[in-house]
Length: 257
Image 1 (cartoon, rainbow, N blue to C red):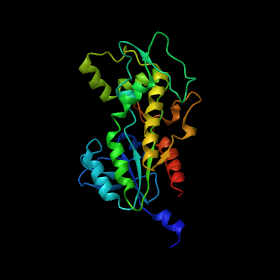
Image 2: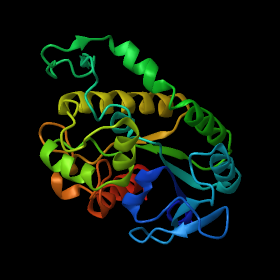
Image 3: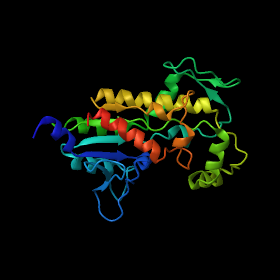
Image 4: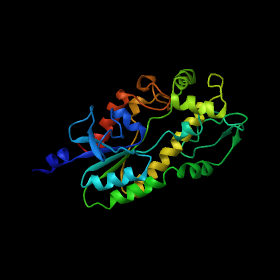
């Protein structure tokens, strides 16, 4: 078997949190765990990784490491912290300058905080990823790749309509006594800055452990840096299957497949 044929046939596993849904599979197994599941939009050698307990427990990642053997592993790690934590405007609005994107405007009358504070806050979501990438790098064969998750959605009117229909935000609003139809959203540029910081941190971890890094497809991003509406899933944070096809193409190119 020649080298190119071997590269094409080696198993590739996609694993991670809810953004794997863009590839049309779930990381939660129904009745057998751990297991690999078909990825409908991908070639046969690309499989999804699933367990009954799912990716928010470390055992999912331990099972992945044990299951991976010499497979290439593609990880979509969380990626919606900018929405879960900061979709609604805080009592004291804040903003910051992103060192890599200093041209992005600041929100008037916002408290300016250092980017280092934002980085420190977001790092707490990545501790386990650091460990996962370290373990995957210890394998003699098989590569690891980290994917960017979709950039934020920039149309606030459309975003609110999606939020009003999404159980997660309905439940959260009930808990804190918030009227979703009237709640003030964080400025869209702040959401973009938070997303940029999250993915700078992801890339730094990928580089630290010699993993590949797959950026969000440029064809899916509008001139302001937000996800184009034709690639929106019908929720607040995810990309749809059209986005999944673009991202899969980028993943396969990164793998040289």
